[in-house]
Image (cartoon, rainbow, N blue to C red):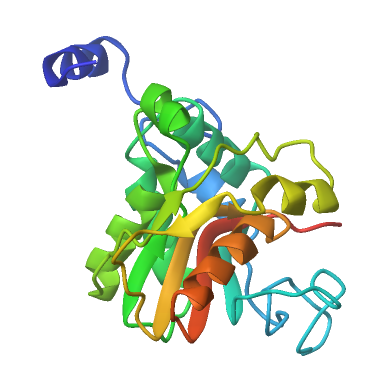
Length: 228
C-alpha cells in the first residue's frame, strides 16, 4: 500500500488501539498499564522472573547457551501479544518504535559496542512488509546511539517455531544461521529479536557470532514468554 493510500485509509478509518481496538491511539493507556513489566528479581542469564537472585534458573539451567545474558521489557501475554501480532502478522511498522520506547524505558542498555538482529525469513518478511527484529534494532540504535551491523544471514530455511517443543525448536534452528562473509563481529554485541520464547533462536545465532569472534553476546527482546 502506497503513502497516499495509507493516508486516505487513515482518514476513513480513524486509528484504534492495536490491543483492544478502542480509543484513538496506536496503544491506549489502559493497555499500556496492563502490560506485565519484567523488573525486579530476574535470572542473571536468561532474564526470567525469579523469586530470588540466581545465576541460572529452571528455564535455562543445564542448557548450553552461547549468550551472556538475555533481557526483555514485558511478558508475552495480553496486550503485548496483541502488539506483536499486529507487528508480525499485519506488518504494522509503527510497533517497532513503540516497542523500542518500552525497551529503552525498562531494559538497561547492554554492555555492547554494536547491535545486530536475528534475520527474518525472506518470504515471510516480504508478505508482512517488515523485518520485526531489524526494525527494533534500528529503533534501539537511535536511542542507545549504537551502530547496527547486519552480521547474520539465514543459511537455510527453518520452519515456524510456533507449536514446537523446546527440543524441536533447537533442532529446527540448528545450522539455520551463519555470520555473513567478511563480517567481523565486535567483541561485545547485542543481538535483537522481537520475542524470546525458549531461547533456541537466540542461542543458535549467538553460537555463530561467538564462532566468528564475538566474546560476549547480550540478547535484548521486546517480549518474552513467562511460564506460569
